[in-house]
Amino acid sequence: MAKVLFINPVVREEDVPRHIPYGIALLATLAMEKGHLVQVYDENAWRKGEAVLRQVLTADEWDVVALGGITTAYGSIKTIVRLARRLCPRALIVLGGGVLTSLPREMMGFLPEVDVGVIGEALVTFNEILAMLDSGVRDWGKVLGTISRGPDGALIMSGQRPLIENLDSLPYPAWDLFPLEEVYFKNSESLFSEEGMMAKRRLDINGSLGCSLVCKFCFHLGITGDMRYEEDEAGVVNVAFDRKGSYTRAIRYHSPEYIVKMVKFAYDKYAIDFVAFIDENLMTMDQHSGRTWLKEICRLWHEYGLAPQKNPDGTWTGVCWGGTSHATLCNPEILKIMREAGCAQLVYGYESFAPHVMKSIGKGATPASNMRSFFWTLEAGIRPIPNQIIGFPNEDFDSLRANMEAWKKLGLVVKPHFATPYPGSEWFTVYRKQIERQYQGDLEQFILDLGDASKSSAIISHNFNAVELIGLRDLMMSFNWRQLDEYERIWRINRGIPEGKPSTLYPGAGPHLAIDEPAKPSLTLVAGA
Image 1 (tube, rainbow, N blue to C red):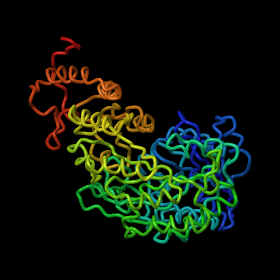
Image 2: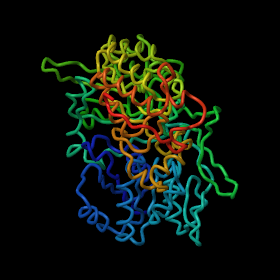
Image 3: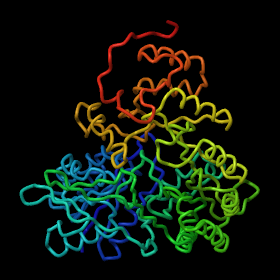
Image 4: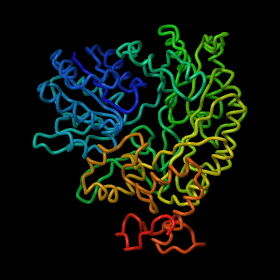
């Protein structure tokens, strides 16, 4: 049996560690069920730096060093695999997750230390890798869902790994291998609701994998069902997805019984008081089930004694919970049922309140459905958490004002994220050449620059550059209509767009002028000119 060291890389360094890596925790359980000896070093939780990482890597004769994560963890991953290769020369280094799946050939080139990459879902693939290692054979090309190096150093992509159909066949994550008491429970609170702020023992769970939506800014590869292997003119196979309108989707979710029994297990064992569903979108799964999934989860939440009962001091027994919702798929009935079962907060990806921007995103929502869902959720007693983005390809002054008008009606202010073309999203595929141009042709530098979209990286707006978007966001948040109007006047003069004409270089179709072509010389004006 193999000695396996899982390492969870650092992600979101600007925040405290809040989320146990669900995928690694599942893989750890699956490996242990096969008899493998498993240890986890959660670098994101401990954040002890290279000295402790060295101690971990030399603590045993590891057969496998395995790690993975989202693209924003790439900087940490790069450091870990370099050190692992030096300190564990005989170990097989395996990398998976979105960071590898989105750009398998590029990642294997950026990280020559990695022996095997896992493309897509690793839940079956990883144990097959361990089984082959135990057999003494290292023909990774025979393991579906992998990319590896041949004897001549050439990259070998095996066949595509099918997705698991029955999620209920999966065991519970190996939560015990992570520092629950020392780190994660101490960082339970979140500023999304009263219950979220008061939570002392929060745990994340996954009720589903994938999403039925086709948002162009979102990661689509590996678990949603629309990834395919595509051969280019030179015969090189790589991952791709269909962005011509014929999207396919694999809608997979645990049964309500599985979910509630897992929460009950965690409640009895760890005395948790809050559960965060880290699903892509709860409402899309509820719609796909015929509007039975969430109702049954809520019914069983009561039946298993998990529905929270408030104490006089504001604490509660039972388990409060929160997750994600969708503006067009929620309704007052299900929101009321969810609240009665302990739902305290729902995150809504509103993205924008401008109709022309919303149509370009691919989410299917409208300004009216956004507004309606917000007040429906409030009326149900659940906190709606609006998430917004600026810097979309056809973002313009009209869309910025539409967002500000919506904030006035909602009685709040949202600090928007910046539209970021993460690898694995449709917009990364569409704008890849422009992205590389902004980083002088160095794609790796773009990946190293990625964060949680609260800062700008590659810009895909056809009308605004990074400096403009940062400044415009500040004007929006302070409702500074006067300076926004004044800057639009300057912007129009600089671009030769008279008043009365659409304030956009890209009204939704046509050439990508602002990104593809060199800017034409123009008069630079200052405010008040």
